[in-house]
Length: 246
Image (tube, rainbow, N blue to C red):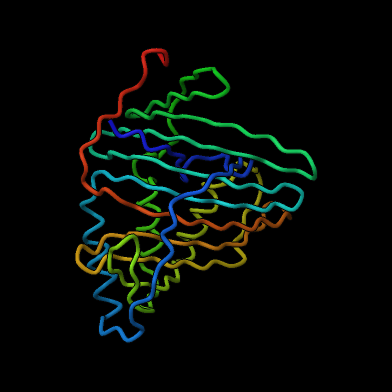
């Protein structure tokens, strides 16, 4: 069974949560800046390849600064879209001044039901609406769809040769992403966003993505930085909810 610790970026409430933990260093190594590749072709091939993705693993590092509250969130997970099953774990720490709180949450999602284990207690509740169209790879596909693309260079990510793409997403995709990240009610506006995706040259699957975004939430400024890597595309998974969760 794959039990890669997870926390889904799609889940609401990350502004209120936070976490700290490292992930494997997958910093890209540039191999060449002279790339003979059509941005339109790479974009089309990537969207086509990602449309057939059924399962994968991911690791992510999310940091957020909401003025008086700073957060660092470590996310790891496995997703099986065909079986509609996920396992996720969040190691989170929220810091306000000299005070901090840490928590670890494990979540199993099966079909439309989430089983959540936190502070020694299991809870069962409906999964967020649109869970199976808003997994981490779906979010990256949404950014890439109808975006303006520039091929920056060829880079190696975890031993995989990739095209590094500068992605200028469609504004509606960015607004949708921002609204799904926040548990803060009120107006959400995107002040700035920068997205870079690293797409495998051979398979055209997204290997890594980075996001830097500044939001205004009801007059408060939120700085968010996300780094996420994907692996084990197509691997069989066995995600079983523990007996004690029921």
